[in-house]
Length: 190
Image 1 (tube, helix red, strand yellow):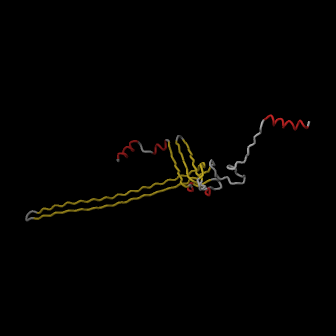
Image 2 (cartoon, rainbow, N blue to C red):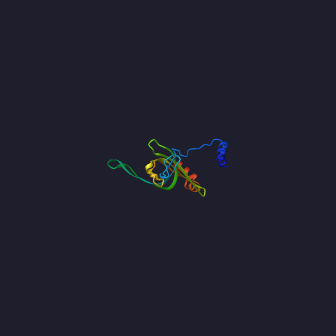
Image 3 (tube, rainbow, N blue to C red):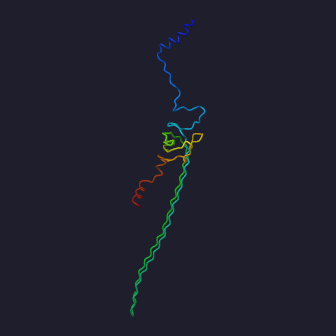
């Protein structure tokens, strides 16, 4: 009876064919349980905290004045003739351009590769659609591993060669564009 119990697993192993075992350890993707969970490999996800604020002010003031006067006077006994020509030109111009922008967002990007110096190349896109209005945020750039926090986040001003774009499309964006007649008059210089 004891030999039947031992021979049964042996018989099953022979009938089922060769048993193949894979190694669960992969040197490239192995992370010990005690290691930090910060992104560092291509395909890992990293959260970007976008805090961008910009403002610009340009002012120009111009004043120009020019006075020209030419006079001719001729006199005779009884007749006096005089002729005077004058020109006065004044120009006073100025202008101010002021622009401000602010973008606050939080989004996740994927590590797409590693630079030769160890920086992480990241890229990602987030699209939000509310009532037929689409808003798209795109981020790409290089992140130093030193700048990644313990929470696996990095601030947008820590991204080198950053390209951050925020685009809107839909009814709201269409209402903010000038109409056809306004664009035509602007193009014509009116």
